[in-house]
Image (tube, rainbow, N blue to C red; front, top):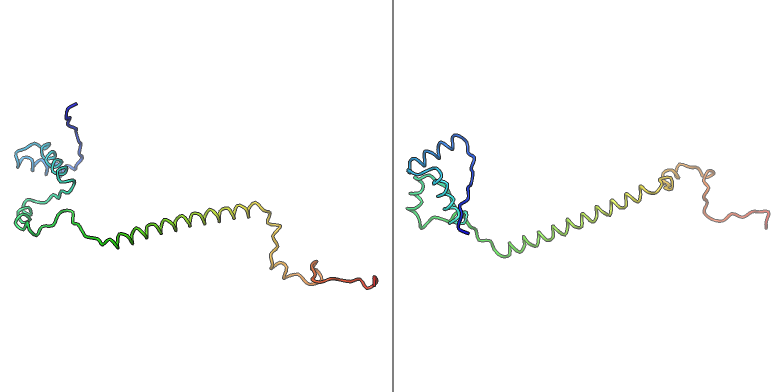
Length: 147
């Protein structure tokens, strides 16, 4: 098989289309050639292409020694990267613990819902009763007639 060309479609506003057509006419090339040039440049520079007006190109090339690459790159210390990785691992661990806790709470709620609530005696209810009404006594009672 040979090298086949593929078609790419773009949707732009009417105003931008007119601008692109004017650019193509200024350069005496077709509108398709404008896009082909842009795509070729994008591929050649691994996606690191910055579109700037022509008057800025001359300023940039005149100070070529002071021009930084696009996109800008920043040196990051290895300790920062390691700390970031450690924090990501810790966050993942905490997320797992949270999910485990949520499952446990859900299980306890389901167990509570399964049991009848009448089996539960509230301490507040016991405090309101008098000693004569209470069926529970601590200690042992002796019948005087038995001795």
